[in-house]
Length: 309
Image 1 (cartoon, rainbow, N blue to C red):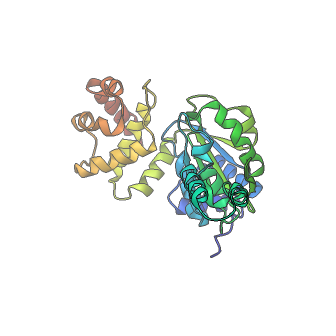
Image 2: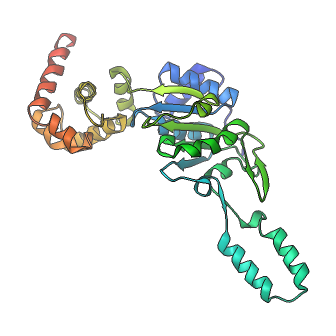
Image 3: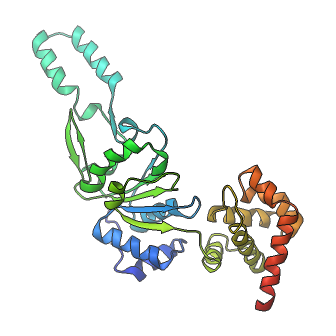
């Protein structure tokens, strides 16, 4: 089965993303197009909830490629990210050989050659992504790289530069056709320059009101127009406040769906106060907005909207 061709230009990239309900800004569409054409990893950095992970999922759907996701976390190592040997099966083979028939010397020699063969190799995300047996090069998502420990980045360099992994006991595994690689970071720490140099970089910020409204129209098409406009304006106002965790696009979408379940046609202070837990995820943030602050923000956005009516 042949996967769809790569985009022919920036406009084609933007149109194909939009067809899958991902609303890209022009700069992002440009960076995505260049990453695909130049076969360079795409490094996306920005606040949580701005659509970084979603771009990898959308690219996989757009290009008809399988998505392989490596979710980074503290303590992630080679065994969890790339490969490990099936030690239990190796031990079983050793015991069977010890009790099996045949000349001991030849049995040990054959076993030594077999123990680190392909059938004992457990492939994790990185090795799966560059497996030359892959029928179609996948989209490899290395998600939230900033959560992994810094030493892990050094191992990634071989994958990002040459799309290969060297396994001491086995040899070098190299992709016949490079996967599409997307790395994301919420910038809880700085990623090493050596990683960034091997990638095309793009900062993914929160959308402006017009783009967020367009996203909402595609993701929640049944939302009443006035309610959607007020939700976007309210969320935009919230992002101007000093909160521990600013609401992302996913929270805007979820809040809209929640308000629709409550049959809301417009925002009102009571409904906002009762549903802030959908939009904000920390009690200190909820406490800062709940009550008079929610009413003040709602009054302010309506004052600002008056001339436009």
